[in-house]
Length: 63
Image (cartoon, rainbow, N blue to C red; front, top):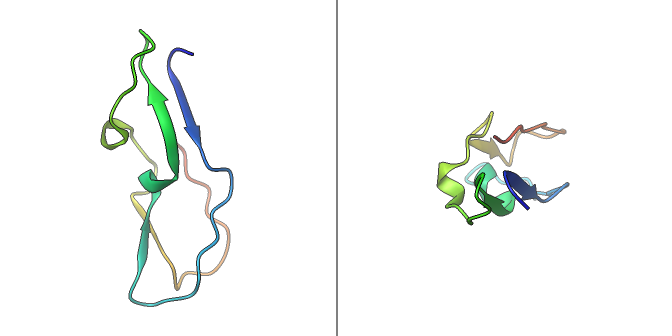
């Protein structure tokens, strides 16, 4: 299990103009090349957050 990022495949949000979902909250775990668990804040995401009033599907890439 080296260099692996496991994330939730789907996240459903209730429409709320006062809330944004941090995409890193979808990360279950991440490991580096040695298999050591790393802090999710060190994972790069193509989008930092999703506004819950922005309906639709959003593809987020993690690395």
